[in-house]
Image (cartoon, rainbow, N blue to C red):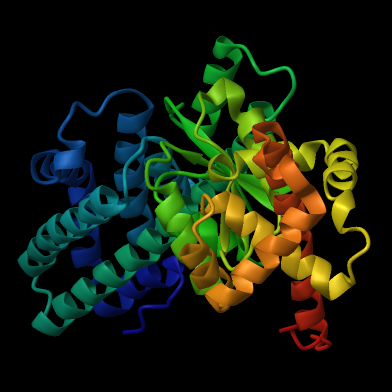
Length: 407
């Protein structure tokens, strides 16, 4: 017996297995059989133990009665989409297909027992009863498959609708001005996204976006942000650790804004975007909150350029290589509070070399090196110049034209 026969073949085949008296006896059982199946489903399937009322109850009872009529050859009434709608309704009710599949199995067992007893009472052979059982369970597989199709259709519709709502919520969170709380709550409810007490924006390369969203903790939203993807991470207590690990694993660079309340999501994105303008160094994750001074300097490039030209004017007469060495030494001197041993270790040079360079810097800057205000300005300018040199060096490395470093 093939399990891929159309419905009409199951019913029509009964006449070839059973004599007219057996078929008539089975049809006579149908009114009471429908009630017995419904009661068995309520008793044995936990998801359907509640009273079968309203649209839900009507759907179950109609499905049972229609299945019996079709199986026995009465195909003149009933919608052919009944079982697809049952599957569709299970998703809308928030249930898996487990309960419906169990109901089908219970119904098939009860139906076969009653039908087999009716057929046996008219003298049907054991072979005919076995064929009847095979036809019954193959038929149940057929209508269960239709319910699966309906469930899948509902899943697609829900996913499509949910993604539209999530995209709208993403746009709303990053809009200017920030959305009012009731509007945000309504949009989040439509997207089935609980509004968190805090969130952070993470900018990632588009090629790494899908993997990043999948691997981050929490239900992250994502969408385009210029030529990158912005990932809005709810409750971002672990986002720095996770994002760094993901970026390193994917060999991608990411930029993380600060943790903020939802109304300030735009600010987190703006800080992440500002961090994007910084040279990342060797790190695959640039954390805006750890680079605030650099971000502040980068946000006013014309002012920092003017400051740099003014305070580093004493080095203007040096060669490019000498100027770079003296700038590195002066920055290390400022950072290491004048410790020549620490400066030598940072620059990987001999302490005698440090002493020579410091004497040269004293000759060029004079007593100004003792002025706290000038030292502050010098550190700003030197940090900017050092970052520019590192960025230029990386570009040369990527192009394969790295020049030998000076002594």
